[in-house]
Length: 570
Image (cartoon, rainbow, N blue to C red; front, side):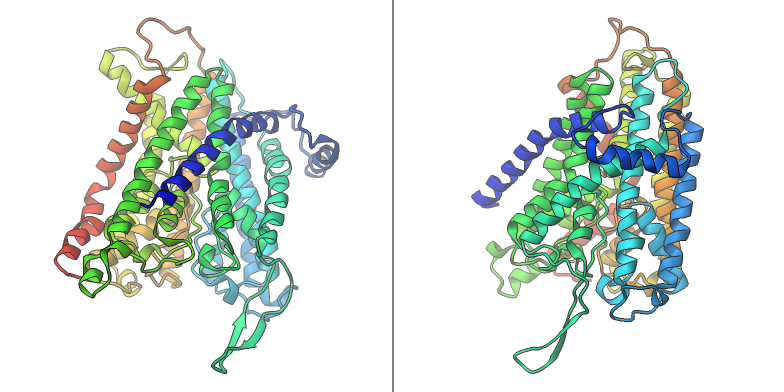
């Protein structure tokens, strides 16, 4: 890493730290049904009208089952709505390129993908999606799927903060307020900034030009800035263009690249401060944040190191070692910015990419893969990162209780068998989906047929795909031909499992914690703030991740690393 890389990394961490508290305080206002914001004079009438049209009383709170049912019903309608748009795309307006409707399996995969905040794309955006599909079918979900994640996190935090309670808030109020007061206003400003950097925002037909050599070239157009803003802020990640944030239209300048990376973490980081304020223990919120940042810091350094060291096979071909691994990277951003972006986008459940992860060195590519397999709790997606990390917090407290021979307590609440079982069920769902679907693909003709690489790298491609789908990330190694009936269907199922079969036990955990009575701390209570707790939480995350996925990683990127040193390519 050069001095400028260290300076940028320090600047990134510094700004992220500075915005965490203001974002957390604003989230306190947004996620309180009676909270007041500076946007009230403009947005409040629209909010009230929305409740009236929906027939919703925002003051009537839901128990965990009602909250979960409302979320599942809303998501199901969203899948059907988007599936219909994608299938009927050729009959709908704003389709200047007269693009056809999607196949049934690709429409299913895409509808599920955007509903679950995954944004996995088995298609090239500019070659497959009309402007109507991009804006009405997909960008709509970029907002509401992010708002759903924020609402689930808020419900879990309320369950921790409340004592002897039966309710966790109102799903519809959380959905509406997170969209109207948080995501929409920030994205309006963000989109205007992106336009100022040179990002396009239009409804023009694609432009046909002649190159200097006399060949015909088609340059895609479209409403890009509006989609890129929410894809980053909402940790969605679906690119308007096939090459995503590596395309100069989607990521025109170094400043746009930096701000996009910052936006991916902004809400997730602020939610840790929101946690501290809600449970009246701000030190706990900062301890959770510190654990996330420590894991992120180590991951960036590992990824950047191995990309800077480069591929010895390249060096044997005469490429200087100092050049590092530039394969698959935009020279506008270079090695460090590509490594930083890759780690951020997989630590959060974003999936946007500014480089080709398939071209990373084996251990450089292991980092984004492992980030997803940890459940993307390192800052994480909007809402999803916090509620995923809180599952690990429950397990860390349980482990601490076992070590001191006491019933574990978390912020004054006893952690008993039910809570531990729900936490473990959440993690088992993640593990079984990733490893189960990968194993199925490995021994099936349809799975092997999609590979463009053999050996351990081909295995890593399949493992990455199902890690990305189950983790609701959406990025890909991109060496996998996934637009087939079997891959589209199994990846779609993995997305549904990774989103909803994890949320249900988390909501049950929230309901269980809300119903418990808070007891005052005693001399034997394990403190959930400070360096000791942070280290324990980091150890819990890494230990569980290693136990679940180290054998699979050893078959993929780890063995590929050693074979690369012997001159083997795949």
